Length: 409
Image (cartoon, rainbow, N blue to C red; front, side, top):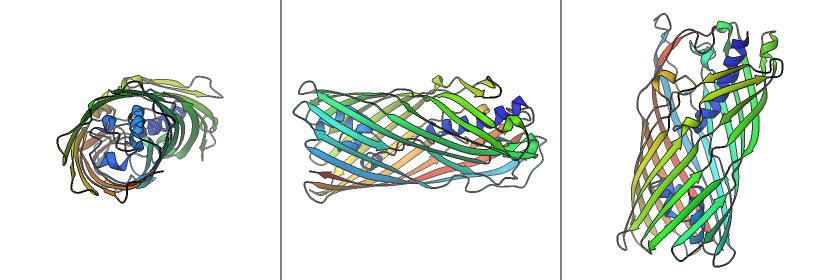
């Protein structure tokens, strides 16, 4: 019976983790940066929304500025060629398991004096909704998964010299997860809910060689989450109806970006990010009735994100943006589950900026993300002795539409 509750709680933590993996870590915190596929986001500092990637860039935001925007995320994930562990074709394609959502963001910045700049941002860095039919063959491994997160970050940046700026932020992050799956081989179902508020830190530096060239370095710490919640079931089983807690360390992220203006018309930029998923080495589940439920080792790997981009200043008001990126998955094929049908993906981005006046600017961007084909192949008993095996092939892609406005007071 211990393994049954472990399966349910394990699924909950996987859902939260999946939100922060390559496919569900929401980089979409700036419509302007999205137009370049986030190439040069750590060095761009074109408005204060770029502070999510590098807080030191606030020193380029003069006076008081407000940026408000959002990204409409339209994912598509379809499962086909589904078999059970015996190799029987279930003739059960699953369409549209990932649902569309809006990821809002807002930043306000204020120049305190010639050296000190303050900022406050609100972001949704993690988010996911997946839903299968309750009777699909992989129901033991996941039916519904929903993750919501909101992060508020007070920030400060300091212009140390004419060329060097540094900054720091304090991300205060709220995470809530809700999910369900079948238990006891489909004899019943169970639902887990949990939430937490935890704090990390953000560091950044920017060096300007001249007015046309700069580089930036950004670091976001891992955040040590401890979700607290409960499990409820339609079965009269004590272990499936109790309070639980689970520890999860989200990964640290290091990024470096470069920006260069070639002439009055053209700008080029590049970005590299390393996400340290090796911090996710185990899942430790604790219950009120049974103090220690389980400790499950994981095999997640560090990932790399590469992006290049260019911008073309068409006239005094309009700027065209282009970008391409390659984003690695943290999940190896042997460890991929229906909750995490994740794989490497390619980003293709285009954007437009329109300066309505010296104070008001609008940004719009569109990105198409195509993921490599993904396969889930789980045997009977993974990870619970009562769970049924499943094989499925996934076809995944995402469309992103970003909009924002920036106002200078």
